Image 1 (cartoon, rainbow, N blue to C red):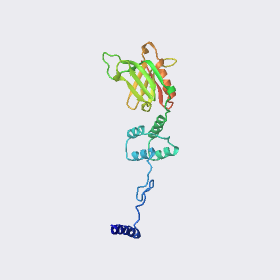
Image 2 (image 1 turned 30 degrees about the horizontal axis):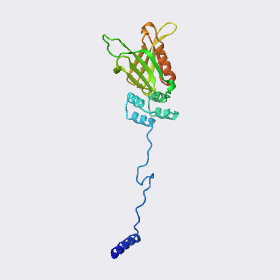
Image 3 (image 1 turned 180 degrees about the vertical axis):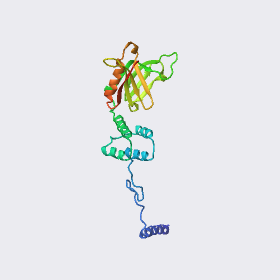
Image 4 (image 1 turned 45 degrees about the vertical axis):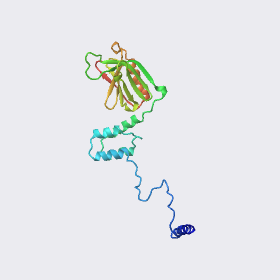
Length: 230
């Protein structure tokens, strides 16, 4: 037994003398030799130029811009760079408009609101039914909600980020237009709301909603559209 222990000890000493070293302690946070160098994510400007040079259409680029999460406005250098690459002004403007939407401030609890006595327009062909559904419109927790009074399947839920535009539909009248309908739009949909007594000339609630949204989101596209009849 003593002989075996002595042989083992001798082998260990011999290994050390031959230059064998313990395995090095791994280090963390440093790049190993041969690792690829870090490359920053391409900016929106660079991606737009690349897509434009690939002969993609303006419509495609506008859809690309509308789905981008923009962190900052275009600088003068960005605009010159895009223009020199041949991009039309309509695409450069689309970036600025998208930046305004993304930069809209979020609401606080003090800016929640609720409107009862509104009606929402039915889309499509309506036979033997009312064109307008009654319910409640509410803005709460960064979300616009429509709760239908009779059919939950007609409820609408829109986040503030989905809303791209609002407008008031106004009947043309001498001395000033009479705005009677509030319209809210997303990328692919629009929803129209009127006071339940709009046929009797009650139009205050749609105007209240319009003013509320314009105050809460000053960069939201807001307009008034004149029409000849309700």
